[in-house]
Every structure is written in C-alpha cells, then in structure tokens.
Image (tube, helix red, strand yellow):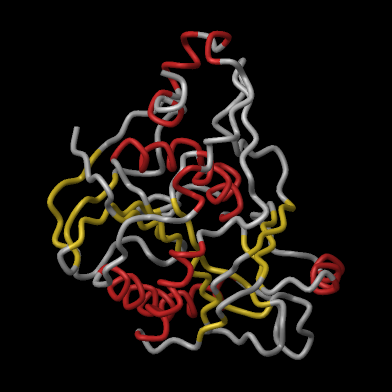
Length: 289
C-alpha cells in the first residue's frame, strides 16, 4: 500500500469535497481494524508536498456527524504515514465579533456529544493521553500564518463546542453555550482531535464560520439554505489556506504530539491480548516491542 511518510493530511468538512491544485497520484482505499473510513484517500502533490485528502462526510455528503467512523478515518491517516492533519470544519459563531466568513483557529474544545467512539483503546489495553492542550501548537502557529497569507479574517484562538447534531441548537442551548464563553459550535472535531493525539498525529482545526448560531436574535434562525450559501464562499477560503500551508517548510516535529503515548500506556506489555496488540501495532508498536 502507498505510504506518505511525514505527509500532510487534510480532512475536508462540509462544502470541501476536493482539493484544487492537488496533482492526484492515487486514490487509496484503506482497510482498518475499525471498519471503513468515510471515503477513499486522495493522495497527491500540492506545492511539492505530499498530501492525503479525505472528505469527512464522503464525496456526496452522505454521512451524518454522528455516523462518522472517526477511528477509521484517523487510523487510515496513520496507516498512510501522515504526521500532521489539518481539519477543515464548518461552524456557527457564538460571539458578535466573530462574523460569518471569518476563520477561527480553536485551541480548546468542549464535548457535548453522546455515544461516539473516541478512543483506540479498550479491549484489555488502557492508555490515558494528555489532552489539556488538544491542538498541536506548532501546526496551529503554521495555520495562523497560512490563514493570514490567504487573506482571511482570522481569530487565532478560541473554544470549539462539539455538539451531537444533526439538528442545530435550541435557543436555550445556544444561550447556555454562550454563557460558557465558547467561540464557535460544530459537530465533528472533538473526536478527531482525541484520536489524532492517541495516534501521535499533530492536529489543528480551521473553523470556517457559516452563520451565527440561533442565539443571535437579530439574525434569522439558522437554516440549511443559509449554511450552504456561505459554505461555498468558505470552501474557497479553505482551499487557499491549505495551499498556503502546503507550501510552507514545517520541519521536524518537536511538539508533545509526536510522543503523546510515551507516558500514557498503563497496561503492561505482557498483559496485552495478542489481537489487541496486532490491531494497535501501528500506534503502540514502538512502545511495546
């Protein structure tokens, strides 16, 4: 199977189903112990950098947020050899000053989802990764520079509240979340961030604002039509940002993400079931030889 050691992974959110400028070299169907990823990974070259692109909801947008196989998606990137993931996501704004078509680069998350699988571990294997700072600081800094170079209005920090969906918030929920000081609301990125950390992959989010959430009573209530219209504008912004970061020299990783499991594994290697060891080999292999 194709390997892109040290390559850049890009997860395309709502409205971003392909990458302009990507010179496609292959489309890879990756098998994982956790089932099938959302789609085939499109592997190619962008500004001389090898990139693997995955449309989060499938190319035809057929997968609900709660139906996403987050484990398979991140495992697939790991299997391909990706070390950094840029996750593009459509979000609603929770603050007056963060306007539709702005870009937010969250550095924190709050989880309000239910019943979602968000760890590779279990089945006789215990690990507790550090997640106090859920976004890679090095990749986050690079995305800030890339977003500014792309001409976007950028908010370089903020909190992303991850809700269950697929329905949008009630007004009561929206006002509650605002009281917590969150910046944006979305339905997908928290699980990706957790799993990327377990897989020792650097992860950062480009949150593209499509609307004000329904707390903003001077605006019309959120509708799918409104969101889709703004998605088309934001997709072009996302393309420019990814193109910019693909052209950057990112260098070797010196961030904590690269060794997130070094002190996180709790189960003694001799107590790990053979099937579990085999399933997680590309994640834990260098620590349990």
